[in-house]
Every structure is written in C-alpha cells, then in structure tokens.
Image (cartoon, rainbow, N blue to C red):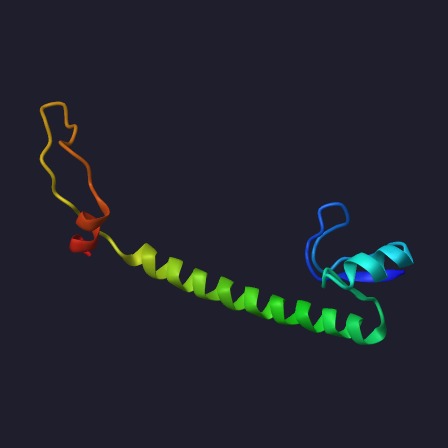
Length: 102
C-alpha cells in the first residue's frame, strides 16, 4: 500500500515521504497511530498544499532574517573596559554590558 508519512518514522523515512509498505503494516500500525495517511488523491493534494505553505513560511522567515541581519550590520558598539599592561582585559564582557551599551 502506498502511504504518506505524517511524521518521521525511523525505519521508513521523513515526514511527507510517499512510500510503499505492506497493507497490514499500514492498516494495523501506521494509519491508526496517525503516523501515515493512505496515498489517495485527496491526501496527495493535502501534502502538496502543506509543502507549499511550508515553503511560503520558510521564505518569510528568510526575508525577515536577511532584513534583521542588514540592520545588525549597521550597528556599531564600543565598550570600554580596563586592561592590563599586556592589553588583556580584566573580567569579561557580559550580555548585560552589551545590552547597556546598545
């Protein structure tokens, strides 16, 4: 029986894979546990729609990450700390120091 995996199954494949398994394994184990759907026209359309939505979501996240990265590139921050004779700092620059400087 042809099935579509709803979740990643270690021995079979990743979520969204269309695979062929024995009828009994599909009907008695995978489908009742919501690990797979039967690969009929309706479920294949459903899978394509989910993949399309995931792609759109990934593009949106990527665009916002690129926008945020370009904003971060423009930010400059200087933190003055005490140093020893060998130009090594005493202590550490912590996240709270950076937050205060920004």
